[in-house]
Image (tube, rainbow, N blue to C red):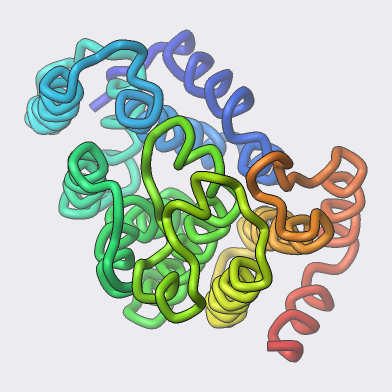
Length: 298
């Protein structure tokens, strides 16, 4: 199977560079064939995510229809029919080339459909159910794209890294998700426990209660990063460097939230270009030492 043209792959790369700067920067460490697969995965995921998060006037029915058509293009593409969309052409090639399980792809699409209808989560386990498709499935796809081991423990740790990164996104984007999408990804049980209400979130109140809630969620995310680290040892050496760069830079967003005094309403926590360059240089110089330190710290 070979559907994608060079132009299709280039479009995926540009989308990746524009919207996924941290991930994109890390994947520059990959060999060309792996980069091509990762760009394709990102393009596939981003197109679907944009329909849900930035619908540009699409109705809920149109959003669902787009996602079901996305699924249909996937199924037909894997059956031998060339997909209509450039990102799907590139993605089907990647799925075929490295054997990405289709159940993981369907799990991702299911999560995007869930996002249209569900704006709050009662418990963290409920939120994890959503993240299983929106984040963990992507971690599994990445393992296949990188020719990594696919044993149960490696997959478990890859899913933990995906969950950690997704939770980091949720914490960074509390204000944006509520303001632009009317969604709250902080579990209601945690909000109740710390005395935080949806109304206070809507007002952007950085109260002691809200700070305590964010500290709790930040530690939860850090625990997930730390659990994932042992799985990074099992990656092919060149893949390990890129994953380490992405892991370190993404987890540093949590530190930026803290440095911003937990203001996730008016400030966006992000790493600077200088931090990205420094992190990449450190990992390239001695990834074994960096990873050993992360595992020991955990």
